[in-house]
Length: 327
Ligand code: TXA
Ligand code: MG
Image: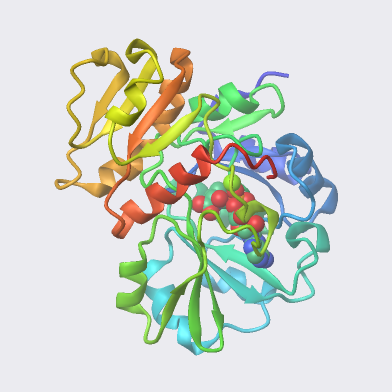
């Protein structure tokens, strides 16, 4: 099997109606989608990704109205976030209704839902009479794809169709939140920054994400996710690593290091003061590209621990923690 790449919503809908899996674009990363209500279809997602059934999936909807039957109720405290961030890269955990099959959310009491902000996918969702379950369209443990090309090279032999919506605008997965005792808990840092959440949530916002936390809510939140195959290090300085690896075999991502010793084609320099959104948009694309260079090490300068820098650091930290092989 070799996936076709195209932008025909009709083809995607037809395959999904048949219980097949289709890769779809979102504003965060590409998703591997199937009819969330059809256990045989959802099962295929887990098989293709090599993902344990204990790791629940996010349900995607065209709008809030379409979502309501699948949750118990939407607490009023979350209204401001829904209004501000949907459609957009915010995933919310709600008590689920009986319409959500066990396999889709690992039999947990809560279900993760979001309304993605991508024209093609919103049109697709509107044309369907079921929500789409969609994890990121990568083999478990590898970098999430931000273009149709990434999906094709990672999973092209396992699916029939990739709906090509161009390069993902945000470039990092959605932020996952839920209410616990009136606090807003951030379970996964993502494309909506904690600063933005705090600004729009009337109450305490608490981060439980902690990249290296080994007691996650679900296996998907374990470290050693989001990793390229090349070893990666998140570093404060470059010098400490230059003595251990041949400089011609290092890739460097930085905003202020002097990189004279490193071949130019292996260096990416961001001006993060200018635009952190841009760094977030490109980071997976760059890791994906550097992974093709057959390097011994990718060295990344830690971003300032605020706004989207917090999310980027989180992903890089997980990618660098290769000791832990769980997914
Ligand atoms: O941006 C995104 O969220 C992308 C696009 C495709 O929408 N999706 C995505 O899905 O990143 P995935 O499956 O790669 O990551 C979803 C994370 C997993 O870590 C999973 O464990 C967690 O969300 N999750 C899903 N449902 C959950 C639930 N009911 N309770 C706790 N965690 C949940
Ligand atoms: Mg994922």
